[in-house]
Image 1 (cartoon, rainbow, N blue to C red):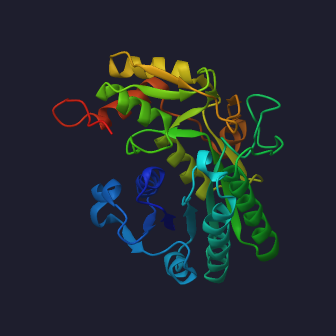
Image 2: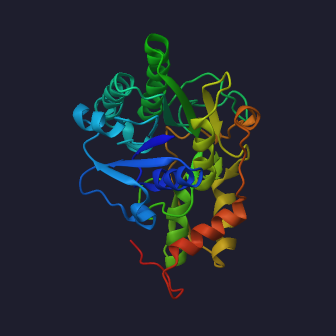
Length: 315
């Protein structure tokens, strides 16, 4: 199978490339010009790299030409900032994805795999863990645009026969996650803990999320690429929740030192609990998480420590 990974040089995308190659598929990576390819340097000549602008239909057309499967992992916004400019969220994510879907159907792509957000498309939970048929009431523009893209994937399947699968991913963490970014509690907290810097959390630390190692996300993508069952939307998580305070305690164990925690006012868009029901993925994809929290945190800590065992640079 020929597969193009949009955003293949990023955190999740690079692990998807690893998993696709391990499964025997040919991999093409699409990244913006000048974007870092450090995460896939280890793949050397085993992949094809194509540069272009996600907003340019011609560039996207070149990226998907001759491919069987497209893995769409590009997103230009973050949940916490998306409400500041919803129009930008639509212009830079929804519109380019429509252009991608047009390019895919006109160039004979068999299936589009969309990495959606299990953490934001549902909104406040009415039941926990959250199944795929739970009502969708996002509290941030990020979740709304993800849900809109899901609906457009379904529309293009209905109108044009373009097959698709949606993976609603929980909170991924692991090696290659940026430790100085605005998203990714595990990497940010762990890096600051290793550096001896304080961490900041919003609210009282009771906000509960479903944390999944990135290699398990990648294995779900591989399974979804060849899935032939009746469902097209899958939760991808662990089915287990950790509060922020529980996560901090687990990170302290992984790095072998206590961390200083500072509390800030709670954020209006943070739902109190988000834990995904992954029964459908387990039943139809034959998938389930393989990396436990302790192992995943240990692997993440090892990746953040520089050679020689010193503390990472703070920042």
